[in-house]
Image 1 (cartoon, rainbow, N blue to C red):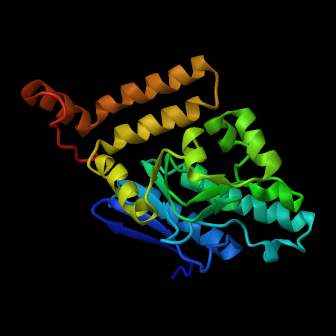
Image 2 (spheres, rainbow, N blue to C red; image 1 turned 30 degrees about the vertical axis):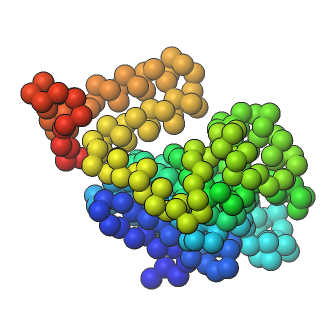
Length: 259
């Protein structure tokens, strides 16, 4: 049984819960358990949307520095691959994913949040990539997902300085999508993904893949990804139900099964 990461499922929502007090520092064990939880959420028919949550006090304050301080190049080549793989598994979950950020999301913790589709932060949350202050750079997507989200100049500002960003600034630059009272973070994240839990799961997965993969290729290739995904959905039950419901009852009244 996992010690630091749990996948809790209720009403179609899977919550990946980080639980390594006091600040959910990302050691090798937590990273491995995170990869397993992401893989389980990806394939579970009971999970239609996902929340990543670190608890009421802290999302994740970064890597376990004590574990890394004396590591050498060969060791960190192996371990950084494990962390990148875990975060990439989160990003690849073919379902809507929201990070519910309380307290700190720093370094690897922010990189975990960047793997989500949306980010909801508490008013007192602080986010950042402070690795430069340790003489290193982000190693789990911070130099890649962050500029894709906020643009290269702002990403360089955050990575070069290592400064922490308050929730209001994070919202202003597009690093988070909502800021709510700290005690309401999980509820707000739940409200955000509930709207997708009963949606057409295959269409949502197709939309996510088309957007995410399209960002990594030229426009013509992206349009082809979109065309193939679009046409493939005409083999699904949800497409037939959705269009028949539209014809018979008008928009927004379809009931989807995820098939």
